[in-house]
Length: 171
Image (cartoon, rainbow, N blue to C red; front, side):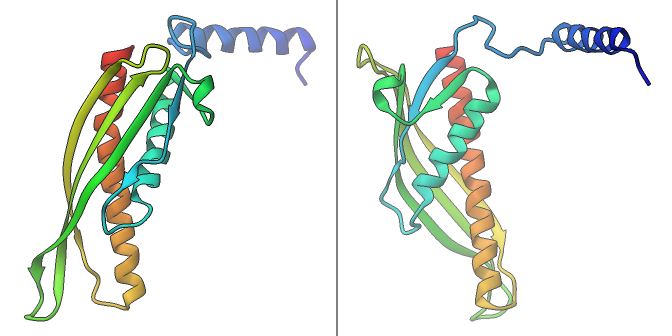
């Protein structure tokens, strides 16, 4: 059994190791930036994709340690607004004349990061990405799950591009 002095010494040593490798509880500037990320307007045939992008973007910015998402626009220093312009599903591989083996999902969307206090657009852009996924030969449920997995992967790719732009241009 460790004595309380040894426990304290062990905790202190672990703390120094964590702080020594660059781990911080707050951003390097000591200021936590609050950001509001609303659900994207979705003009595509895939309902809920705008909400998926917003959710993944919140997660990505929290993991960066530079931003804290808030759910009230008035509390935020920055606002992220976006829209899904289109998502096209195009068959690219066939098992036979009537059976598709691969589908390409094409995405196009626009986003802006706005300084809430000044109203100035800090970052804006258009994102275009695509993802090819295999269509299982099984049941319609299996095909639907494969499509949902491909949409999630596509959303993660889109969010990675957007979060890099936000971190590069704001921080």
